[in-house]
Length: 219
Image (cartoon, rainbow, N blue to C red; front, side, top):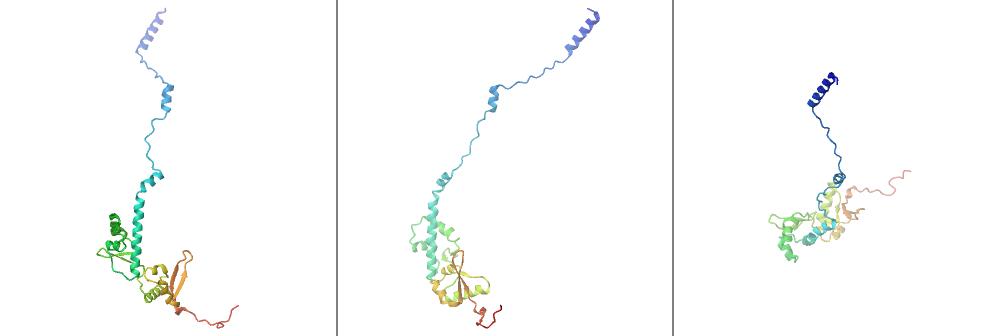
């Protein structure tokens, strides 16, 4: 072999030995099993317990009889206090005295405490006295015909409007007879939406006495 070629061959081999060997990384294809594992859903997270309507009803069913019993008790007490007021028996009573007069002494102690601390003090139809007793509180403090007349007149003068007959019935016994005794000093109007009677003072000074034929017809 030509000596020059031999030298070139030896030089090439030396260069090849000194060069770094770089390995091309292989790309590993995922196996079918691993692919299947990755695509399969993992363990599902713990589900939150959801309360169904039936379960909610079951959970609250125990409190319903107690609430119904309490409000039935309150209704009886307020009704009794109203009747006392109409009979002009207006001195305050303690809760124990109320239950005794209404023969409701067998009410549960928790309900009695509820009446004394929550139900009666917060009821708009009941007034609490400083010594912890209670008395009925009507919307209007009216006791007789004259006071009703003055109340209606006051509403008319101050532009306060009419007064519901139902509100007066809480303060005046036989309110229908009292209203009728006022004659034409009172105007009664039935509301179209709830069919309740509203009373207005009839200011007769506003009446115009026009006689027939006093003014000619303008055609």
